[in-house]
Image (cartoon, rainbow over all chains, first blue to last red; front, side, top):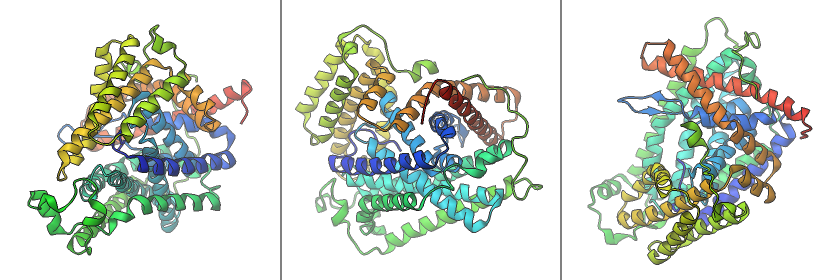
Length: 328
Length: 204
C-alpha cells in the first residue's frame, strides 16, 4: 500500500502532509507526556521490529505467501501514540533509505499507514475489549477484529487519496483496494492474533499494560478522532455518494460504455454521481459480509487460542528467562 | 546479503559524495517535486530532469548497472499501483505518464540514498528541527535494523531446522512465535539501551 511518487498530485500531497504532520505532532507530544522515559528507546526498536517482522513469510496457497503489516500489532503492544511514532519512523526510513514509498507521497503514506491504520485499529480494539470484558480471550477477539478493520480502513483511505489525485478513478480504486484488502485483512487478523497470544504466553505484562494507553488523554483521543474523520471527509466522502450502480460498473468493465461520456481521469466526483441504488447496496452487502466473516474468524481464533486453564490470562509475570540475547 | 540490502550507501570519492547532505536533499526534493508537479505528458521537461539525474549519476562514479538493478527491484511496486489506472477508460496514457514520473522520482531517491549516509540525512532532519523524539527513533531504528533482521533470519532458520512437519497452520504459528519472540527480545534490548544511554549522559 506504499504509494510511490507521481501518483499523488500537488493538492493531495499538501493536504495529506498537513494531516500527517499534525497527527505525528500530537503523537509525539502525547508520548513525551505519558510514555515512561524508560521505554522511549522501545519506539525505535519496535520500528525496527515491525520492519524485521514484515520479512517473515506466512504461506497462503500455491506457493504465495503473505506478511504482517503490523499497524494493530504495534498499537496493541505499544499503545496508540507510540505506535504512530514507530510506524511513521518505519515509513520515513523506508522512503529515505530504500526509496520504498515516494517522497511527495510520504504524507499520504504516513497518514494512511501510520495514522489511520493504527488509530482505527486501536479504537476498535479498545471498544471491543470494553464490550467483551477483560481477559485474554476478549483481548484476542478485539485484536483480530481490529486488525481486519484497520487494514480495510487504510485501503479505503488509500483508494480515496489515489482518486482525489485523479490517478485512478474511485470506481476502480475502491473495489480493487477494498476488495483485495478485505481478504488480506483476514490474514492480518490471524497473524496479529497469533503474535499477540504468543507474546502473552511469554511476557503477559507486555500485552496487559500497553504503556501510554491508559494515559491516553481526552485531548489526544479527540485530536486523533478529528484527524481521522477529517481525512475521511476529505478523501472518501466526496466519492461515497458517487458510487456507480451495478449496471454502470458492468458496462464499464466490458467496455460498452461510450468513452466520450466522461473525461478520462477526473470524472469520478461528479459524472459518476447517481442515487446509490443497486451498486450502493451491493457494496454495503459486500462490506457487511466481510465484517461478519472477519468477526467470525476473530471469534474462532480467540476461542481456539485461549488456554483452557487460564481464563483471565493473568499468568505469572515473566516465566523463565528467554535465551540470552546479544548485548546492545 | 542483508547487509548489502540494508545499507544502500555506496562509498566512492566523487564530487557528488562530497556535496553537503543538505544540498543533496534539497536537490532531490526539487527534482521529485518538479516531476510530480509537472502535468502529465510534459515529455521534454521529463527528459531534461532525467538527463540532469543521469549526469549526477555519472559524476557519482557508482556503477550504472548497480543503480539500474536497484531501480528494477523497486519497479514492481510502481507497476502494481500503476496497473490500477489501466482499468479505467483512457488509462493507457495515464499509465505511461505515471510510469515515467515514478521512475524518475525513484531514480532521484536511489541516487540520494546511494551517495549520502543515513546518519547525514538524520543530521539534515535534525537541522530542520524535526522533533528530537522522532530523530532518536529513526536513529535507533537504523542502528538496530540489521541486527533484528539477522536475528529474525537466524530464529526462522533454527525453527525450520528443528521442525519437519509442513502444515500450513503449523507454519503460521511458528512464524508468529518467531515474531513474538522478536518483540520480547526487542523490548528487553530497549531497556538495556536505555540504561546504556543514561550511563552516557542522555537526558529525556
